[in-house]
Length: 98
Length: 487
Image (cartoon, rainbow over all chains, first blue to last red; front, top):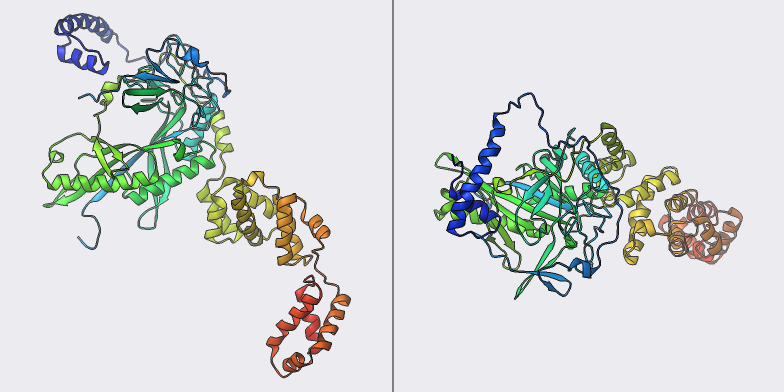
């Protein structure tokens, strides 16, 4: 049973700034529904006796001291950059959505 | 409606984002002082969001955030954590910001301001949480340029309840917040360097036809000066009122609107509707483990908290007998306030005299030299000594100012300056008597006038004796010797 309709997929695609074709929206709606239904099975577990858990690792308070370390040289910084202009990253102007 | 009062009440809440005064960034070792640095020179895989890079929280940033919370009377929870706030924008390289959602580091605090009615008013603070700053964008004709130096700088977001009722109260709230954070050593709050930014929620509430109307608010985003805040609040509240009366969409809409502020045009403009809370898809940050502030650490931070300005001002007035004005000047700068207190200790009391020196000569010289108190060659011990030797009559007030000028330049102790410049006051009656005799011998006329019942000529005679002694005689001794001689 599909728990998802295509408007949700369209919205999530919008938030991810991804453009999808109609055919893709159909396909992903079906695929994501299967994923959601699978995850939904977790609801059947009784968690009333389990405290809210943010992390399953048996540690907390991992921190570093406030010490400055060298940053990357510029050629490293831009090595995989899609666009460079002087010492800046160049990106497409963000168009206001909606 | 009477006078010029607005026909509606204002309801204002403020979110203040302030950069913390750390050396390094929130989750990596890049330098946090981004302002003025050459573009993209303070970046690494963590703050560039490169795949596989892992964040590690900065202990100092967490301590500063907790210190801020304690100074703002917040509660520190036993457990807190970081969350991912997901949205896509070019200033956010990872596609999410590490922030705090449901378990912020500080909750339920307050700070006190002077309300518009002149009475103390508490502004409640909902929460103050830690997050990372974004990169900065520059737009040119061809697109957008990104500098990630600011990316990952620790940012404290302090959210107030909507307890503020006017633009003036909003300013007093921010001034008080600024003062507290600077005093507590948490932030430098340099507005001109982008060190703090504000989002302001404004709504209007009024009666119409016997019913209370309270239409949805406007959120004014990203204000970067107190002046912009004041003007934007005035503009937007008037605009909401006009929109209501023009029968605009404010009458039916259910949700707030988001606007920007154009200081050049002096008006707000509609902004992209940012995601709803659900759209941020917050979830616990899987790259970080939770934080559980140890009670002992919280108490250590609380004990290290300096006296806050409002309390210190009250104490200076109460215990040192200073005027409100002097107290305000001294407390405006934490270093100046402690300089003053050290000098009072060195002087063995005399707080008013010490305050005169600190707010007078010291501040004047500091301003002229554009220097900091901590860098001055004149020390609190020097001021204390200066006050003592004026009080015991070793030097006159005038000579003390001359001594101060020399102390300022050389950093020598007052007694050394007095000796080397021969500034000591002569209280020796034998010397003074000789000078008095000489003056009396030359001023028969004035003395006759004095004896005829015109005591005011005494001042002129004292002046002549002083001049004869090169200004170094103790005027009190001169006056008494002169009175005795001619009286």
